[in-house]
Image 1 (spheres, helix red, strand yellow):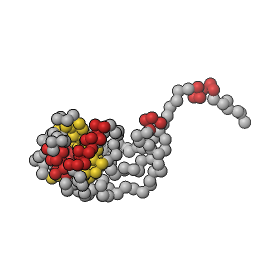
Image 2 (cartoon, one colour):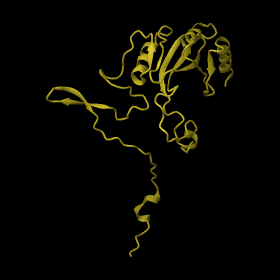
Image 3 (spheres, rainbow, N blue to C red):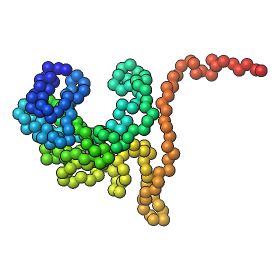
Image 4 (cartoon, helix red, strand yellow):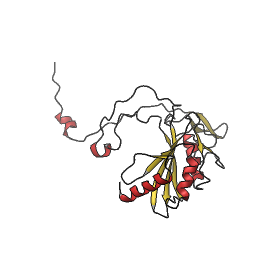
Length: 231
């Protein structure tokens, strides 16, 4: 971690001791997490404290941890070392209502100090994920929270106009949830009798796509294959 990032971490720890916890991050990044209860107080302190001054919310994103830690492939190191088996895959199905399934991540920018910080908070209830809206702290959170509600089904308590923003009117479900089918639940089709577009059950057959490696070398040349020996 650079001296500049470490200096910022000391300021955050001094201002918000007991309210936030450090999270693992890349060497040039600084990330914290907090609980749902003190979220608004933490956000106001990050915005208003003179030594912090995170005046701008650059982005807000929902996260679904349903399959977190269950993948059998390596993650960060795979781009440098090639794909390999990183852990043994678990066969037991994940619990969709398990604690800590949904989280919200805030990417903050301090224009005054030219520094960035990431803050994460997990929703206490996975069956009905609800968390406080930060629109009153950063006005730019308005549409970001609507997007997280639309795609992940995360509810934001106190939002002035919480409604879908990307999916169609009457859409059912939240397409960024890990248990939402990739083919969707319904499809749209024009009905010549009704002379309008209607929703119908999806007709696509689900498939499991298995990646494979295709190597274009001499091993696959037909002329080099072993000849068939007649019996």
